[in-house]
Length: 296
Ligand SMILES: [Zn+2]
Ligand SMILES: [Zn+2]
Image: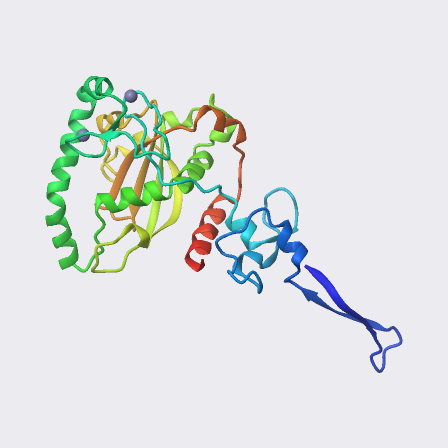
């Protein structure tokens, strides 16, 4: 931002001269200071894009009012590539550039790094695997019923795709809601799941992952989630997903109980713990990022 065309003008009836000036938002220097180009910058490089809009940030982030841009807020959360699931048994992470580990032939969801891991994990996975298979068979029927009632239908696959494509949002929300920034000794994640409320989907349609948006996330104790009036998640179901070694994440679309996905989510890698910090505005950062992507 620069100030140009500064002039002293005399306004009739006033003794003291006034100063007029123009504020230029398209200054080149400003563009160079931008750490990296964002998707929201217009390709021509000029003009006022969404990302460059200046605002005075007076939110309670502890720094007092200061100038920032919508782009800074929207890009607060580091983006990550689509999630490739780690080994269900030993937690080993696959090469993010590769094709990922082979999946269980039954549910096609659980991933294993080796034959040994799959074999030794079967006694824990069996029940969940059968439940997933049964649910997959039921889905066509559920879909027909939902569409006949003009409700949106979302398949487990669509919710899972949202989760994998938005793992950066999920990671960030997990750090904030379960207070992982307090360090690995703070193990709220052992007793609480993170419940994500998602919105989107037109009535009377099968909802693709790209129509789903983040609405909110909150920590909820396993004991309350096990209640029938809440989500009715049986403890053995959570145990099979790795409660005690993984963060449990629950995704609810439009607060409809039958549009729910439950996943065991990896804790941050060892080297990531040190870089975490509390962010009082994390919900806004997630929503702004969503908005920026929609506009971009
Ligand atoms: Zn393994
Ligand atoms: Zn399986």
